[in-house]
Length: 169
Image (cartoon, rainbow, N blue to C red; front, side, top):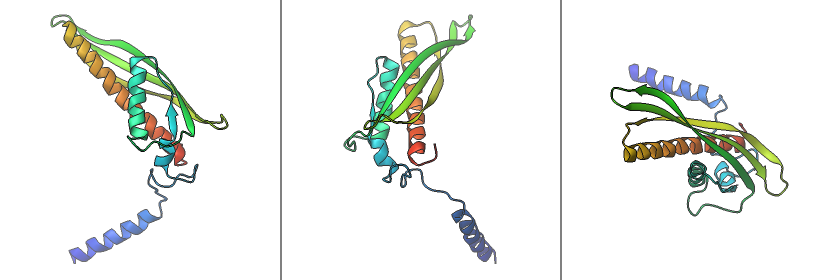
C-alpha cells in the first residue's frame, strides 16, 4: 500500500511539474534559434588593461567558449572592471586586519554586424581576506582574493548572458 502511494505521488508530481513551463537554460535559444551554448561561444570579449579585468575576461572566456569550441564572433562584449579594497576590521593586539576586495563590472553586449545593443548591466563580487602584516603572505592573500572575486564575477556574467540568449534576461 505504501509503495502504491509513493508511485502515485511520483506520477502526480511529474504531471504537475510538466505544466510549469520549466526549460533548461542551455536548451534552444529563443533569441538566436540555435543553442544557448553556441550563442555564448560567439561572443568576443574585449582585452582588459588591469590585472583584475584580465582575470575576469579569462574566466569568462573559459566558461563561454571552452578550448576548441569557439566559432565566429557574432557579438562583442565590452567590460569595464573596477577594483576597490576596503578595510573591514582591525585587531591591533594581533596585528590582524580584515579587508574586502570588491570587483565591479559594467558590461555591454552588442551585435558585431549591426552594432545593436543586445544587453547591458552591472555586476559585482565581494570577497574578504586577512592581512597579518607579513609582506609576502599579505601579497598572496590579496592575490588569492582577486582571483576568487574574478571567478565569481565571471560566472555571474556568464549566467546573465546565458539568460539573455535563453530569452529570460
